[in-house]
Length: 235
Ligand SMILES: *Cc1c(COP(=O)(O)O)cnc(C)c1O
Image 1 (tube, helix red, strand yellow):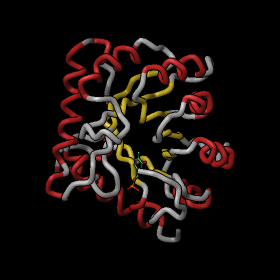
Image 2 (cartoon, rainbow, N blue to C red):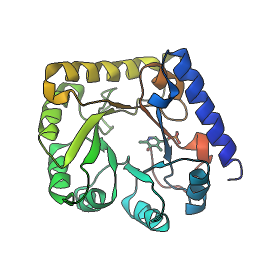
Image 3 (cartoon, helix red, strand yellow):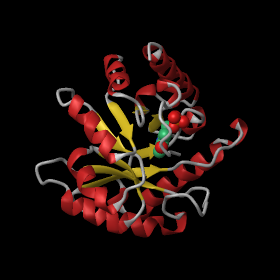
Image 4 (spheres, rainbow, N blue to C red):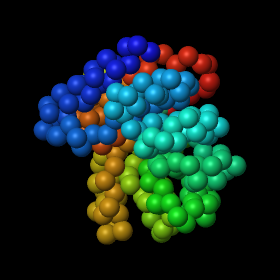
């Protein structure tokens, strides 16, 4: 945990270097620190190092952590599988949802988002490698889902998210390029999609490839926090 500030500087430097190499400004890439499985002390250290965005994939665990930071101006992102009995807590407590892949869940979230809160920022998770065991909407069904979601005023459709299957470093760019082109195609189909500006892609092992292909949010866990201390299931 004492290395945390160092790790964050290293990740920021990597984002900067890769963005520049791609002809992009580093401030077009948001660093989302994936704090799932990490204690509040680790989050506090990241906050002290200037991180504002945190990703969690278990609702109960996240709510406990939020309570410890109620005075900080942090943004909480839900990145895990959404069970329908957890939508209310997500609607009431999170700023972003990256893993939306079903209209029925979107409709619940929209009903449950408190009217005094800003719309919930959402990304549609795409099953970019069409793996039968993976979450995410099939690319062929993406437009239909997007049309349903963009019609819900309590949600703000921001873009697409994917978790490609692991690949050798030299092969990592292709699924990200595909996700970027799905977003471009979607934006071209209707003016209702003109506000979509987000590609949530890239983790510790493949952030360079993701940034080279246009990632606007990278979701980084291990490169910041080190190995997760618990054994909870995660991707
Ligand atoms: C755990 C997780 C990450 C972070 O993965 P690391 O390899 O630790 O960087 C990113 N996105 C999602 C959806 C995750 O579940």
